[in-house]
Length: 256
Image 1: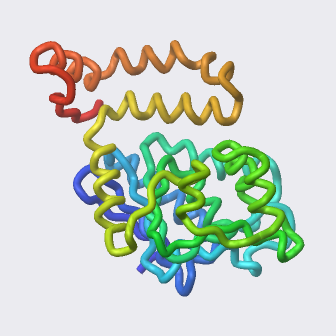
Image 2: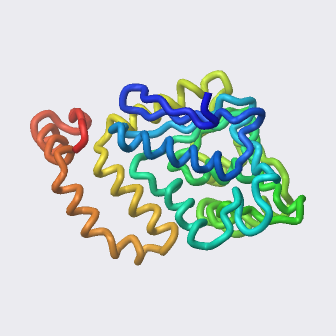
């Protein structure tokens, strides 16, 4: 089995982390993840479910996989930005299903997803400070984005594990479910997103990510172009026609 497996389940691209024993991150692992995301896009999936086949979602970086600079052997700013862009701005909504531990880079991988659903037995943490390091894949700034600087500093500086209920209260993750319900709940969310208007959802993702990175003005600068793509889409015409005939919630979207 590949260290990152891809399969298509209806309109959902299922990407499964499968690197024994704990999905430790190195450059080949990140490359395989990006390749799986690309396969989901090129095979006309309408959403992605990111999950793990191992005991943990991802227990962090393989310390043998980097010697300096950023994680996974990626050592310059351009490579880092390309990596984060590939993970965070894949043009499909991405749902992360987290069980076990999501630590260090594993937590950061989850933070690049649009939605995080966690088992109630999961644990999250940025443990790098305990090794004299700092989070390498943008975790500090993404927790700041979701929960504010005080919580981000608390998580990164103390390097403690946190239970998912706390992170749900802080707004870092979206939903906590019993462990045995995680596969069904996460697939349900992925299928609901896959059944939605792909162009409009992509526009929402673009504007939200631009706002997170560049503030409201950064998103506003792309609002009209994003609107125009949506108005030109078949999904928009299908949704508006269905609304006028039978009311909201009746359209079936197939994408462009």
